[in-house]
Length: 308
Image 1 (cartoon, rainbow, N blue to C red):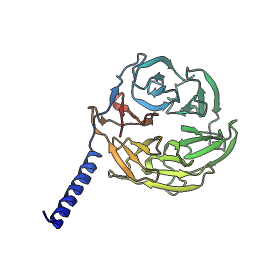
Image 2: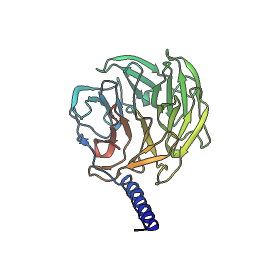
Image 3: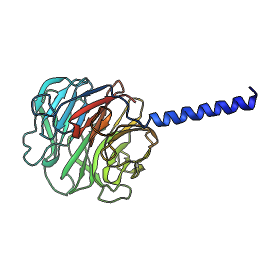
Image 4: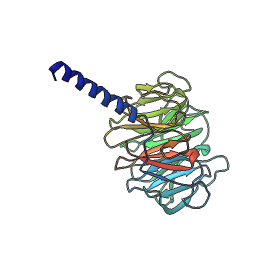
């Protein structure tokens, strides 16, 4: 075999490997674990809508029955089921973990964030006054805390904005309004701090991720409507892995994307359907300390665990 033929063969093999990698990144692989069943008994779930994993590996879910339940990372119920004080106006839609490992519940229809211990004891409430004025809230979708203890509360509907509060819950600033320009939003569904200390915001109906500083200044946005790599169709939640990779769950595309923090797609997982490896209107995603991705498969009433 001469040098030219050998080089051509190498190029063919490389091209084949790239094509295979491209295909594998876009086919639904078998999940490590699938758990959950529809029901109202302890451990059952009915259209789960938000997830959070605390530092001790406790996985919390809230579903459309308004129940918040705790599981281990293999889906075994830990004997804890509770609700917010009232849910006649609607159910919580966001869960996150504060700096002390407590559970923050976005009590969406009651204009507040409730903070609970890992065993369901309410510690304090942030907000509570409905309205449009600074320090008041409409529909709260999520809450996250920065290393300094400040809270960032996202809203959509009546107010399309993010409010920053100090560790005591006092108003500092708010940014945002409905629209498509930088620092304008159309249904902020979730937020997360990246390894760079910046705030990543799921701008769902604009089909993008917006990135802000802790002072509310615009840094960048990525995404855009579509079905290809790096594009989104109604992204609903996001979570960072320990290596700094970003996972975004897309309700409209029935998939999870793995991306760099700049928005370059590194792979996709999931297609529409009911089988393992398929998703139906997934709402939420969380990454554990082992790098395993837990996907809230809402209309299939289950959680799927996969490792990209």
